[in-house]
Length: 190
Ligand code: IMP
Image (cartoon, rainbow, N blue to C red; front, side, top):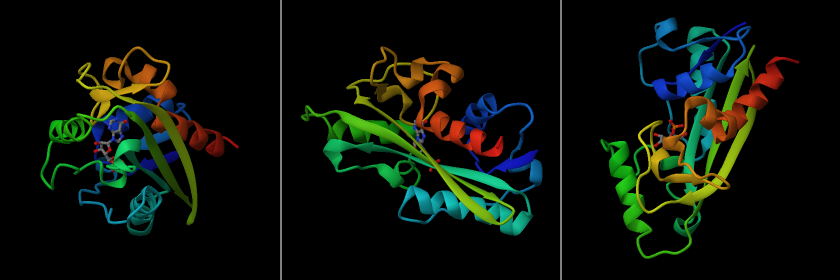
């Protein structure tokens, strides 16, 4: 089965390809010559994931899935949440987002947070969504160089390594995206 994963993030593509069985061939946006920005202007992860998946299905005719993910920090009332990518400003880098979060939590004891992913699958014109979530803590300094985004400051509950100290497969086994992808695989394998 061929299916498009609608993301421009090479890290996400690698994480998801590592999880999917060989019967499911994941095409990238480049593989289908889709080079434009995908729409992503909803107020929820659910909306954004659906917008991206429907865009590819409607305009390119491929069955497609897209994910939208965010870091939700309890002491910040769930921020950055759906705005995780550009939390520190429109052109910001991942490190700017990390610095902003660390600054906002500077004098705060409650470091509880979770990562949440929503995957929208649009298959033959019908949509199904899958969710994955992992709880953890925001650590006060960066640990590790792997991964992307907020990985260096997220310590999953029960782990001694941040996401940025894990291999792709270690992270995929427990991560929000990994859990949502497992639900996607079991749906596609029915
Ligand atoms: P997106 O809209 O799903 O691409 O994700 C929004 C932002 O959330 C990303 O740009 C990252 O900053 C952050 N994010 C999503 N997933 C992860 C992850 O697995 N690790 C670290 N940061 C993530």
